[in-house]
Image (tube, rainbow, N blue to C red; front, side, top):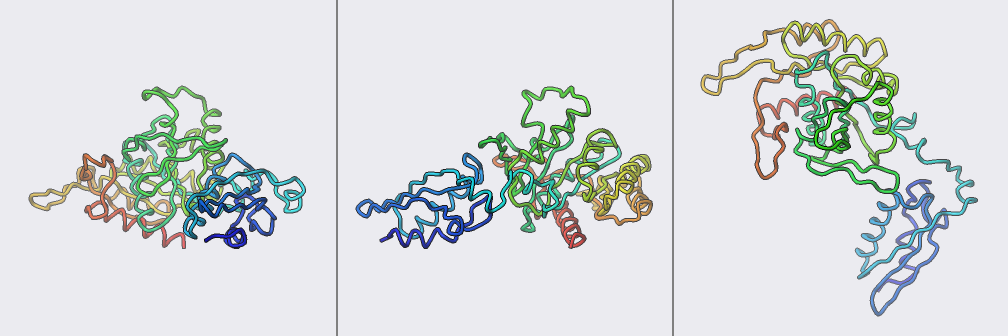
Length: 350
């Protein structure tokens, strides 16, 4: 049977989500009551900010911990810690210190760029994100192609993000946390915005979304070197980039502009992915180079990087019950190529 002393012992070591100090250090456990006849535990906990996703996560942690210890039911109330406690532990607004854009952020940003549309950049973004998640990495994906958003449909996402407090909770699919402009428009409506408004929306995706801990945050950029790409380069000075092209000489030539922009802004290019590299006949096994050959290698040479992988033409196996029209299964021939690419990316990032 749980006692008040035992409850205190269990909860003292938990960390307050904003101050990153234990509840014991903050004297944040304000009240503990145990009703033995009902095996019910009620607690009152102080946190730096109430009504947040972080509070909800702490609540879930406390409930699970107490139920595992034998409580039948758990009641939790939250209050805000006194100002002197906040001042003592030097906590300003959490938004800046833990922001993905703060210098303390441990998240690696990877922009997926191309010189022109139609080369399969979004397909690459989706499958690279899923493949990294399959390797056990914590992955987020921003559909930053604000005019041509397609990631939710490609991943078979039918839900929309929910809002907790002032934070947007991204939708999770295949182990990837996803946010897209497509979640915030009705009936596939066109986006008629000027550049500065696009930058504000992109900044909101970084600062107002509750990403949690991420190893990698991928950005599916619009094709070319327009406003959104410029915003990414200014907002994320340490961003890495992957350039997507087809073997066609024109596609590779145009993609070189996106690569040159990355180099001029000190973005490290992780490599080139050549999409639609060939078509392989299921009957004969013969490869047909529909869009020519050598574009990816030529682009990699020009940008002084490597070809991370060559992806053939082919569609995923569709599962009507779990429909995701652009995601390749891990045992699919193309899915295995994406897995190899993901391993190269992880290795390159140390």
